[in-house]
Structures are given as structure tokens and as C-alpha cells.
Length: 529
Image 1 (cartoon, one colour):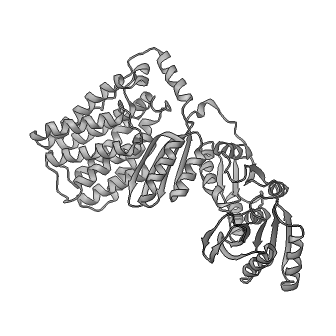
Image 2 (cartoon, rainbow, N blue to C red; image 1 turned 135 degrees about the vertical axis):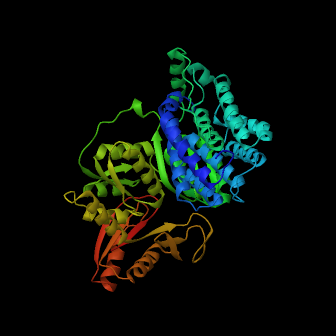
């Protein structure tokens, strides 16, 4: 069966690599001191290859389909810095070996591994020698040297070259030398390449070797951990739906925020990995580029700050406005406040969720906070909290959700009720234009009053009260029983009273609720239920 790398062999390789990483996961985890000593590299690689193997099993039967499935599964399931880089290895092999569908000759196999090495290095913002990248480069070079002896010899050469390079990593990177270990990501790659060689040569080892620690004094590892304590505190990962042209700007934004940046993918789907202090800012960068989803945020020093479990049902609302905070609190919510124009720190929001109870619903009061709330939820779930983010996009939707909140219901039913109430509430607001801009209803100039409905500019005027009346009439044209008016800090005296008079005259059947929100940017918030 040797000397073949067809569809069946690719599936066998993916299954064997996943099994081998499962067997060596704990040993690889124990080597993990770079870029942070969080002891999860083996676990992350194992989960990444499991996802790739599962996708390969489900793929179409020809070799091209299986290779595509392997690469796509790795992209979607990549975990951690090394897992994202390994997904590039699968992608590089798939792009060269997949077309044509036949088992490759040694030269094309060498070309594929070389291409994989280039993709992996290009995906890392600041490549470091003595890591999985160095091991992959060496495997690629060795494959070319062994290509003359046939596919089996090329695969053996790749595995042997990787093993030799792995031993050199200790001397290439100071933190590895002080800790007396080889690079954990490189060790995982060696296991994957050993499994590939085993499938191609039909020579299966009894066990897959992971280099043991050298016995360096613990002081070296303590020094490594002190360095890590000064490094960014959060690992942020997400899949991103975004056009290819948006990714260079995303890389620049994330590179300014932190380190260990890896962005891989293409054709509108990307996997993003970065270590940062401000996890919320990393998610917001993704929001500016496209649609982040499957967001995972891990606190890299979690063992330093254990949190006591909390019990009970709670609702956490997020707002920047003092009046709204008081209003939400009066409705029974716990409030996380932040500065106007800036989302709250992710750590603050996540800690507030964990402190609130073991069943928590989160209500963001504007679209810009929604992604951050999802990220905070991911982190809070690691503490065992049942959490749901109600997709509220405006303060009036938060009020509607709070109005139906019932802590005596089952949590799932309570979240559904709040979500339905929020979704049934149309929202609008007024803004004053700060500059000239083209809107969906024409050009606005500085000082113009903009009436927005569901986030889109619906009318432009010069008189705030008149634009407010137009917004109300437009929103009520589709029906409604309750109108909520929340006056901002810049609202002129008597605005809410004038609008109440307008509604009594035009729509006496509608109930009106008026609040003082004291929000800065919007003179008026409007809700219609």
C-alpha cells in the first residue's frame, strides 16, 4: 500500500495524525512555554486535526474533494496559534496536491510542502525562528533533497528533517533554552509529519516520540513565566466573513493591538488569532472588517485570578448614559457603564457577567457593543455560567426585554421572551450632523438634524422637533401601541412634552412613556411596540 497519497491515504493520514496527537497531547502541552506558557499547544493541535479529519471523512470521494475538505476543516476548526499555522500546512498541500486527483510524484510532493511553508510563514505577522515555522522550513528543504528516491523516501526525509530542526529550536529561542524544552508547536508538527510518512511508506511506528525536558533548573521556566506575565493577557480567535481587500487593514489594526498575530484564509472566510490586552478592541477590529463569528477569548493567566462561582438569575445591561443606567437598574438589571463613544473593557464586562449569577442574560444598548457582549459571553462560559446575549441594538429594545423578564421562568424560556419583545420593538433616534456627508436620502451638512430609523437615515431637516415628529409618524405608520421617548442631554426643554401633544392629537390610541436618559450623542431615542 506504500508510495501512494490518494483520497483514501489522505483520510488515513488525517485519522492517524489525530490519533497520534491525542496520544502525545499531554507531552506536547508540557513543552509549551512560547509565546505564552499556557500549556495547551498539544490540545489545540489535536482539536485542529480532529476537525480536519472529520471534514475529510465527509468530503466527496475523489482526492481533490478530500484535500479541500481537509483544508477547510482545519481552517474552521483551528485552535491556538499553532493550530492556525497547521491549517496553512493543510491548505498548502491541498492547493498543490488536490488538483488532478492522482497520487503525487516526489517532485510535486516537495513543491507542495515548500508552498505550505511559504503560506505558513506569510500568515504570521512577525515570524520567530525556533518555532513551528523553522521546523516546517527544514522539513520542506529535506523533502526536496529526498525527492530523487521516490515518494516514500521524500516523506521519510521530510519527517527526519523536521525532527532534526526540532532539536535545534532549543538553541534558537532564548525562552526555550532557559526552560530546557523544544518548541511545542514544532513537536506537534513532527508528529503530524511522522504520521504522513507512516501512511505513505506503510511503516507504522509503535509510538510517536516527543522530546522530554532536559532537566534545566526550574528558575529558567520561572523566568519564562515572568516574561509571559508581562505579555498580552488575552488570546482572541474568531472566524471572519470579510472581503479579501479588508484584511490588510485588519492585520495592521491587530498588529498595533498585540502580538502572536496570525490571519489565514481567503475567498471571504478568514481565521484570526491574536494575543492582546484589550480583547474588545480586537473583536471591534473584526467588526470593522466584516462579520466575526465563533469568537473565542481565553484569559492567558486565568490561574492567577480564580473566581468564586455565583448563583442565581440576572440580567446585565450595558450603557454609557447615566439616566439609562438608572432606568435599567430600576427595572432590575445590573448595569455595566462605559465612556461615551467607547465600548467597555472586555474584562470588565466578562467579570460583571460572572459576578452576576450562574444564569445571565446580557443586553447591549447599541450595535457596537453587541460583538463585545458575544466575546464576553464566550469568556464567561469558561467559568460555568449559562449566558445568553439578547440581540438588542437600542436602549428602547433593552427596556422592552426587561419589561417581560421573569426570573421564575426557565432560563431558556425567559431569554426567548426577552428576545421576542426586543425584536418587536422598532427603534429610531435623532442625531445632529457633525460634517457633510452623503446619506441614503441625500446630502447632509454640519448642523442638520438627522432622523434615523433602525440605523438608517430616513429624513434630514433643520428643526429638531419637526424631524422628531416625522420620525414618529413614519414609525407609527406600520402600527404600534406603545411609544417610548428617551430625552438626551442635548434635548431642548419641552421636546418630549411637544411630542406627547403631537401624539395625543394624531394617535390618541397610543400609550406614551417618557424618560430622561441623559445620553450624549442622541437628543432623542424613540421606540415603538
